[in-house]
Length: 465
Ligand SMILES: [Zn+2]
Image 1: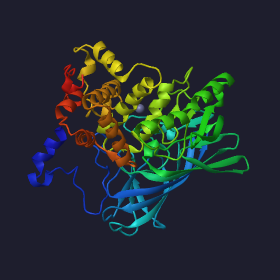
Image 2 (image 1 turned 120 degrees about the horizontal axis):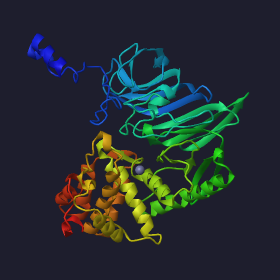
Image 3 (image 1 turned 180 degrees about the vertical axis):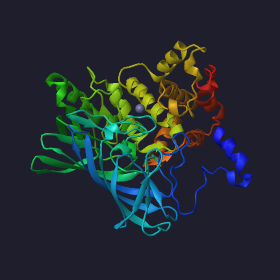
Image 4 (image 1 turned 90 degrees about the vertical axis):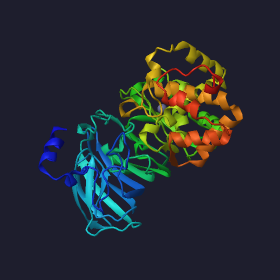
């Protein structure tokens, strides 16, 4: 603020009209318009496909590669941005060498030889090499690797550590991932394995995702893994467990991961057709304190036993988070509240307490003075998108909604949400409007009490209690 005041004294008022938000025509913006993460994603481009070809050296932690992007200009462009952290050697746009420079955060600003017109489809080829483990963005050091295993898993940011992306859920794309590592290592990624080619001491494994995917949900794991693949419950699956966990643990983790297929089928029976064409999961041997719902193939931390509820949660995200994604990160309730609610529903349908009993207990056990009730759920703040309240109160909101509008309308709402917005995004307001439209009820007061008021909802029928 001191700087802004000083400038104000020296220049005419007209000249200081929000210079930070102005941009010239033909310039793609540095962010897609997410208030929590202003540099995430970029304006002016729509990526349709990523073709990532990387090689990784375990002992140096060096990643080198080339990513080809198929892009559509959504406005006239003299230059545009991608989100990427590694040092870049070369950029080509439409087959011609392009100028590029780095800017704040993870911005890679690319200036093609010739301007692009709105609607133009063009290819971008970025060649790069560096150590992802040395890179940070917004204070996050998200590269997870040691001398014999690597797994890319994080949210909301992961792509810029290993491929140049338009890194926001609003821009989904299909994807090909080729990873080259020593041939003793295995590589697992999203979707379907296309091929594995051995050349000398190295092997290149190619995976393909035919359904559009948000960049943060793309992943690869490489290292010594026990891999099981096949078909179950009508879907191909690939399950993998790090061999460093030891034989008994590998066996028990593979047994648990095998449940992913049946849990996927169970989810489909609840909320509608599975949005993707393969399933499975990966248990890493690296020390990580969370699981992540990477598209088609969640990654799990090494635990003494992999809880079924955790698999249910990550599989539920395939519908709520991956197929229907947040439109802005403030909409995170649509991911975490929903996946947590499906854990409750799974318990209810598998010999556990009913959803009603669960809500009664959760509501009754948390006193009105508990700080738990202070967290706003529909707009938790960038630092709190993964606060436990977003999960717990978020799931309670859905059970309360179920009690407020009744089972038929509640499940019709969830199914419609998943079907109508498949491969797209939605906002909390969109979901509220859908619930009102399906139930024919005015639910403003209900959602205000559960999602927007920093207090315990009153125990009323209107609040679903
Ligand atoms: Zn989750």
